[in-house]
Image (cartoon, rainbow, N blue to C red; front, side):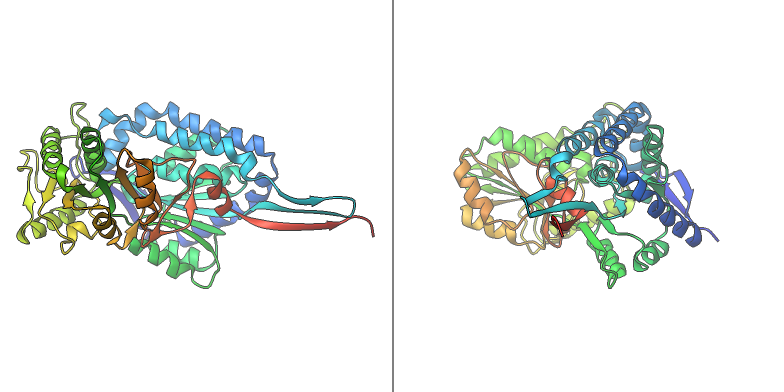
Length: 459
């Protein structure tokens, strides 16, 4: 019997969307079609591939009025924020703008005897497994450069955001990208793992949990398939004693709470220099108390439900454990908190790294705040984590930020900014956050492989 994937809406617990999974045979047929179409796609001029991808991006933009409420129903983000098209377009457009240089040959020599160079060759068939929290932006990070580089792409989206892949495929096909070159699929875990274990793909990009990343690596073991993984995070912010306090509070609390805390690079723990600590906490609490928790379809709502009740249950568990261990919760229960997906945002003080809320990924609207005496203590605490995606430093001194940043185990260091993805920089992480890198020129390098050419003129 064919398994169905369901999107249970966090808005009201109803089944919002349902799709049947591909059978094993149909899944392998789709991979074959992707392989057959890839060489012809790669043979097209780079400019043509770029234009078709950008046309697909624009076609997604034309659907935005329908996409925004769909996202609210699927994963709970309030409609007031207008969806993801701005970031979606920004990332794709930037990757298109650097493609010619990033994919250009590396010329070594060209003289009367030899021409030597290194070219970038598309891997072939790329599997993109995308998450639900920013389903369009996380997908386009790989889909756009992979297609531009000459790969064919198979997109498998989270069950929580079933309609996203369909939307993207429809838009790109309408824009002229061949259907077999970019395919959206609905797959169960066993079929996905079998496809990977059989070496069906030439590269796999996965964004999700640490457990999911381990399952991907296990399935790919022995196939020599390249794998790019963006997994968990527990991103810190550090407010130094010379920081602009108001700016730091506003940005860090937004970074912790936006999208109900369901951001890959959201702020999950904050360290504040001792002289600023009390005022920082006071201002942070006032901001969070002003949030409106409610239906994401209400334009006045600033904080929607978490994407699923089980995600909210994990956050509640971390909060209650911390309080039992001595932490102080500063936000009273919101009346809209239903014990399910609708969750009161929370600020905790009196926390320690013995508590799960300061160690485990929360991925929800909660943040622990600790005071620190100096940079050395802050560095030690920021590095006391199994994860390493981003870290956010707040200071008026660039040299100080650079010094502290050099000692932090992380993929990206921000100064006076947080919870942002710059497409010109490599999006990468260390430790249990995963490996590989997307976007920037390095993203193209990871979606292609080098081919060395050594040509001797004459006989």
